[in-house]
Amino acid sequence: MEKNELTVIEHFVELRRRLVFIVVFFLLAMIGSFFLAEPLIVYLQQTDEAASLELNAFRLTDPLKIYMQIAFIIACVITSPFVLYQLWAFISPGLYEKEKKITLAYIPVSVFLFLSGISFSYFVLFPFIVRFMKQLGDRMEINQVIGINEYFHFLLQITLPFGLLFQLPVIILFLTRLGIITPDFLSRVRKYAYFILLVIAALITPPDVLSHMMVTLPLLLLYEVSIWISKLVYRKKMKEEEGLAV
Image: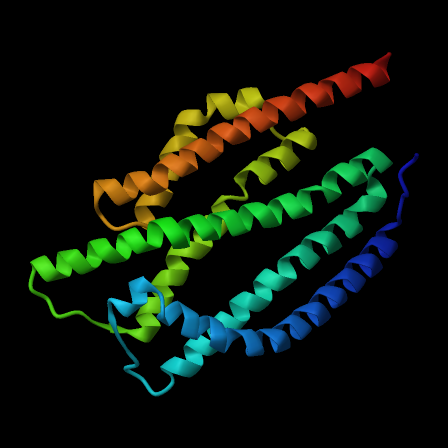
């Protein structure tokens, strides 16, 4: 089936329509998130990590600030699959029927990887870091009085980046499919990619070797998985192009 070609004006009209859909959906998700934010905040304060700390509000506005931050993040998470679908719907007229099906399948995979990254960082990495920091403070005989705002800020700083970093395989898959990168290119720049991932791991972890390795190893594994996925997609792409050439 042939592609559906649109004029420049039609592209702008379609883009505006998609953006309006996204804004409306986000506002609705934001309203719904106001009902979900409070139970989630209470739950996060009842976990073993939070229960081991003395959490306090040092400003009168801290509870409201945390409430709005969590509500905003919930709304963003709820909206993200819809945003990806609207992006797909915008570019789909320029794709062949087979390409439409393939790119549409990226959406559930992307959501799954995002939730996997959040889960890994929250259930594995975050408890380890909290225990490490608490034990360090106890050894130094420091009475730790933690601000509730600081606690949630640190929690989000640890978990959200992993949700984004776990999108690497999908991004590599998409760029390989478009012909922008190749597996050979990813292999050639491996040492530079490793260095960048090491720096990212150092920025989001405490300054100790064990926690740094707990972050670095999954990131390096993700990169290697991305190269493997890129090879599969690239070989399939080459076969399709050879079939069209014949």
